[in-house]
Image (cartoon, rainbow, N blue to C red; front, side, top):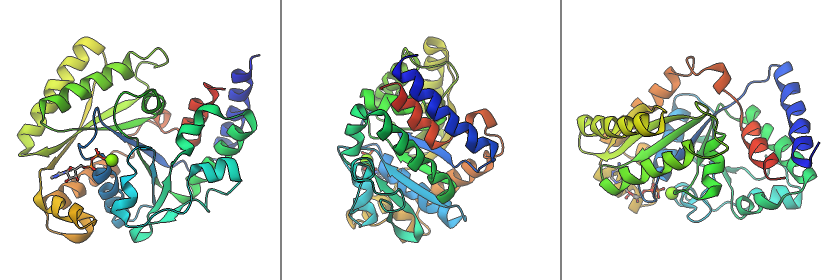
Length: 297
Ligand SMILES: Nc1ncnc2c1ncn2[C@@H]1O[C@H](COP(=O)(O)OP(=O)(O)O)[C@@H](O)[C@H]1O
Ligand SMILES: [Mg+2]
């Protein structure tokens, strides 16, 4: 048995014990896009706030190493990040920063890059710590960062649910297609493994959003033989921009903004399909990490 296989077995054993105890598993949603600047961080944070207001416990994991803008929106600079857990033995609770409304926030920081070079014991420790998030959250929202970097693809490939953000900008639609192609044609990708929900952001109408979805879904089913799901729209909203400029969160600041209403619809859609989310698709955050990491060991 090679090292990666041994590790996978050690980690699987952990996952098995937790299902035996029928532990609750937090639902993981990875927010991604083909290119940057399309609204991922805004969507992650506003979705978190809205789900929180609906009574859900939420943790945001900021895995965008380049642009850590969740912290800007929360107005709190996290003291610690994932590397404090991996290299300095801190616990998962210690590296969670408290954001508004009691939303937890974990910064991947430079720890994300270090994930490529971990040893077996570090991996087992990390996966064990990550597993604790299931007790602390009902929803874990991962802001993945943009683009077809192998780091982002590794995440998406093993994530049960991906929220793909696209704007009407033709280059955004083209970049979304490129990302989906890189994901679905990735050698390690198992057909049907990742459910991709499209969210059309910065649109002028529901019809415009539906048009983007139809366009993408058509080419994806024709050329990539997978299908997309549609999660609706967030309208272009100058109140959202106004909030961003003040480093505030639109759904906390402007209750009647059209984007605030759209975030409510999105959160409701997500809560409502909770029951329908295939049990098989409901694998937890620790499995996501263990799959990424054991592949690298
Ligand atoms: N629905 C929207 N309406 C208006 N402006 C938006 C909307 N969504 C995003 N933006 C603008 O786009 C910018 C980039 O958003 P951000 O969430 O930081 O993108 P990403 O995380 O994908 O790089 C924001 O600063 C905001 O001004
Ligand atoms: Mg961002």
